[in-house]
Each structure stands twice: as structure tokens, then as C-alpha cells.
Amino acid sequence: MSKITHLFTFLLSVSAVVQAVPAPAPRPSGSAHPGHPGHHGGHGHGSWPPHSSRPGVPSATPTVPLPRSSPVISVSSGEPNTATFAAANSAITPSADASDSSCTFSGPSGAASASESKKSCSTIVLSDVAVPSGTTLDLTDLEDGTAVIFEGTTSFGYEEWDGPLVSVSGTGITVSGADGHVIDGDGSRWWDGEGSNGGTTKPKFFYAHDLTSSTITGLNLKNSPVQVFSVDGSTDLTLDSITIDDSDGDSQGGHNTDAFDVGDSTGIIISGATVYNQDDCLAINSGKNITFTGGTCSGGHGLSIGSVGGRDDNTVSDVTISSSKISNSQNGVRIKTVYDATGSVSGVTYKDITLSNITKYGVVIEQDYENGSPTGDPTTGVPITDLTLDGITGDVASDATNIYILCGDGSCSDWTWTDVSVTGGSASEDCSNVPSGASC
Figure 1: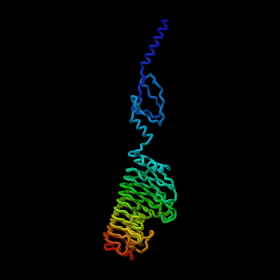
Figure 2 (figure 1 turned 60 degrees about the horizontal axis):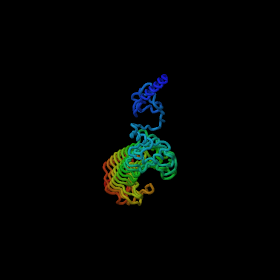
Figure 3 (figure 1 turned 180 degrees about the vertical axis):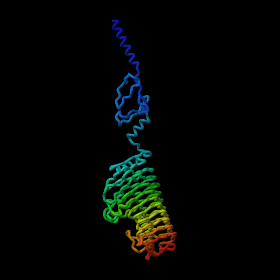
Figure 4 (figure 1 turned 90 degrees about the vertical axis):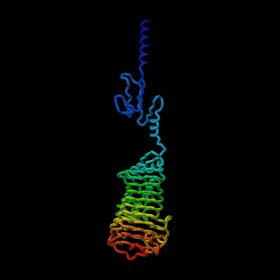
């Protein structure tokens, strides 16, 4: 019996020793693995269990590696680590609060996804988006203060329709382009030499409608099917450093590729634009407090007011067009009003405009437009008053006309012209009702 007693006593002592050895404490979240100083938060690939804190003593329980995609929720003293839990949870379910969220959209589904998610994003990044045919990249009714960034190449599928290809609206919106981006309309697929006057139905390019206290800056647009920017119903909108290159349209049938059409808007500033197109560089159809400055225009129809008349809003006032160059274009400075319509043009100033190789008219002001063409018969329903031309200089082609003015009886008045010197072409013999202070 003594042998049995000794054996039993020995087994009890061994059991006590085993129970006295503590299991290794859990390693705090974010601590380095022993033997791997500075490597925080584990390997992240399920490749460990953690090393034992005591050599020769195994872990109390086996460790099962976590899947790569599983959020890790740290636990301390039996309670969840709320900061880690919140971070893990937000990675799975994006917050509905758009105040600090950035969303990137790309590829053929990018346009639809951006339109669906735009209310949840404070920053919308459009990276190589391919907009399907017959579809608008719809960025209307954005949340206040949203930023939109174009990256890479934005392209559009082909369909005969009116468009627009892109539309943006909202308050406090900033639209910009990343380095190297281009918004490519690939207009040659529609070009037929007829523009919006016939032939294939062509989509307009970019609607900047109903924008308030907003900025569009640094965009590069290429080969618009027809008109590029339509600015309408907007207030306090700045378009800065925009490049529009429709030069391919010269040889491939581009037409009516107006760069900036402005209507029914107040407080518009267009600065530092570079434009190569086949129609007006600027056309202001209605609106007030509008500035165009520092522009370079080539290949088109010049810097225009109008045509004014025949729309819901037919008033243009307080416009300054300054410090700009117009070259290789049909016209330089142009104001046109609609035959037998009503409205008014007042408080317009052209200042420091340089002309080069103008092929039709250096300065042209006429009150006889009907269906997009002059009739030679001016009417008085849209008077042009308080017009200032200051520092309009340069040359036109030898077969062009330096200055042409065609006003109705008494409907052009209070004009001030200073340092207007356009040479190289012929003087017009068809000017009519030229107000005092101007010359033709």
C-alpha cells in the first residue's frame, strides 16, 4: 500500500505544478510580435499564431487564423475597443454623411454609379469613366460644397441625341481636372459640316446650369460634337483656365462648336480660357454682370454678344470683355441682335482686345439677325446703348472688312470708342445709322 500511496502523492504534486503555470496573456491589439519589433498589428495574412510569452510553454488554446477580409475588433478587459469597432464597421458600411467622404468611380459603370451615389460623397473622383451612349454623366443637384475631379480620359458612347454629355448643378460646387486628364467628346463621329442646323442629331457637351457660388477650373475638353459649355440659370460662377480643343473639326466637319454660351445668368467670370473651335469663343445671349478676361480664341467666330432677342430672357447688361486675343477667326468683336425682336443690350465694354488674321469682320455690330443669319435690314426692338470699345487693335485679312455697323434708326446710342484701330482690310460702304463717337 505504501507504493500506491507514494504514486498517488506524486500524481497530485504534478497536477498542482501544471495548474500553477499561467496561460500566456493575450497580446494587446497593435503590439509587435515578440521577435518582430516595430511590426504592429500582426502580419495581417493569418500566418501566425503569436509566439508564446514563455519558452517551452504552449498556448492554452489553439489559434485559428482570421480571413484577410475580416475586421479585427480588439477586446480589452472583456469590453469592445469602441474606436477599433467603429473603424472596422465604417469600412463595411459607408456613412450616409457626405461631409468627409471621397468616392472614386471608373469604367463603363462609373457614370451610373456616380449619379446614384452623388448625395453620399463630398468628393467625387471620375477616373477614366466611359459614359454609355445616350447617357448624361449626371452630376446635378449635388450636395452643397461637393468637389468633382476628372482624372484620366472621360469618354462617351455614340448615339444621335441632344445630350448633354455632362451636366452639373448645385451650390458651392468645385469642378476641376487632375494633371493629364481630358474630357473627350470624340466629336468626329457626329461632325457633318452642319452642326446644330441639320444632319445628324448631335449632343451638347457640358451643361453648367443652376450653379451658385461655384467654380469650374482647369478642365481640358476635346472635340465637342456641337456647343461646349452652356451656362444657364447660374449665379456667381467662375470658369477658370479652361482649355477647349476642337481643332480637328477644321478638317473633319466641326460646326457650331461654341465654347461658352451664356444665358439667364448673373455674376459669371470666365478667365484664362484657351479655345480652338469653329464658332463663337463667347456668346452672351442674356444675363448681367458677366466678365470674360485673359482669353485666347482661335479658329472660330470671335467674342460675341448675342444674338439677343427671341428668347424668354432678352436682356444683356454690365458685361466686360478684356485682355484677350482673337486670331485666325471669322470675326473679332461682334454684337448681333435679332430682327423684329425685343430686348436690350447695355453697359457692354470691350477693352484691350488684340486681333490677328481675322477673315471676315474685325468689329461687327448689326441689328438684323434672323434664323442665325444677317438679313441686311436692321430693326430697332433691341437697342444697343452705353457701349465702350477701348484698345481694339490688330489686323484682318486683305479681303475682310475692318469695321461694319448696321443699326436701326435711333437704336444705337451712347457709344464711346477709344483707340480702335483695325487695319488690313477694306472700309465698309454699307454701314447704317452709326452713332456719334463711333466710326465705320
